[in-house]
Image: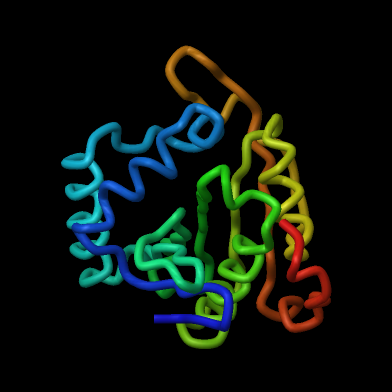
Length: 184
């Protein structure tokens, strides 16, 4: 479990499924992410999958829980690209009512601190749909650097969009200004 006075990141639980469905499934939230489960049972299955992948050291998923809440309103996750986690990729989704509150930025900093300082990640990558101005802005605020465009890399149903490839290096992470925690 990772936390500060505003947010807790914790392992997902089966009884989080209903809350995740409410926060992650609305079209405004899910339009720029890989298809999420569409039922409570689907989210329970996803939670079981994250536990199995964590035990195999292939995935780390955290529920994003605001202070004073018991259930997550989003999630942050990362997985290795290199088997030793020296290079990893991460993704995130946050319920719309928490956009612009600073919750994501605080949770992301906790997760990235953990990834760089504890797991030993040297390079963290993220892909964001080019049309996702909010997601790209959040990555930029964290100090991520856009490295290029992956053409037609994001598919959701019949829709195809370009991805922006972002990176954050461990050597640069500590120099990212921490001001602005109240944003994003």
